[in-house]
Image 1 (cartoon, helix red, strand yellow):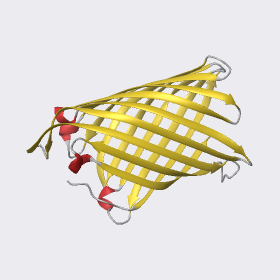
Image 2 (image 1 turned 135 degrees about the horizontal axis):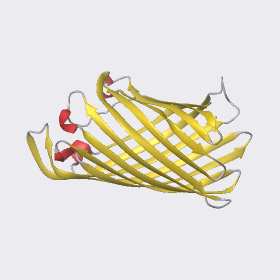
Image 3 (image 1 turned 180 degrees about the horizontal axis):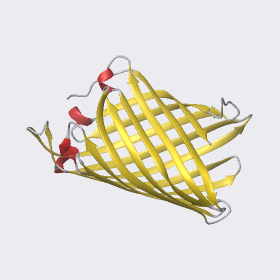
Length: 257
């Protein structure tokens, strides 16, 4: 299917809660819901929901979390895939102003109508955070994601570099800027519909930039609304099929219990 244009909006809802079991031990729950709705092309509507239920150990110096999850995705109003998986997170405050955060994740997506894409996804991530004052922080991070699928042409490795800046401006106004660049390298020659060979091994460069604004004292029942401006561009060595750009404004709603 060739790239198409569409106009719409996106949304994100995040809720999480930790219940103390004893001392520094907690039962962790989180639910992340993300979606896109296009009023002039509903075939591209997308909803992803991931639910975590796991264990967390936390004290003033470090945090360790082990979080099994279940994920479900809908595309164009139809079931697209589901996945079971687990995520491990570790963060350490190794000085007054510095923190390191790491994550490992394994998931096993299963597709309802595309079983050739069934397989597993492995993720490794590290992020360094510098907080010079209570007014904000900076971060620099890197990710490696390996997707292995039943058919080799869908298997790929992705390497990404991330950076960002969070700032409290006074009057309860806050902002955050995030940027990233990623290289996604596929493992075998691409084909269209598994029939028409494209005679190239697909390689994508992905750029993204997000700006989020919110007012910290604007809350309703503990939920904080945020507005986010997002831009993303993908440059592929098969541009007629896989190059595209998107920009949109979305509303985020977050709550910590």
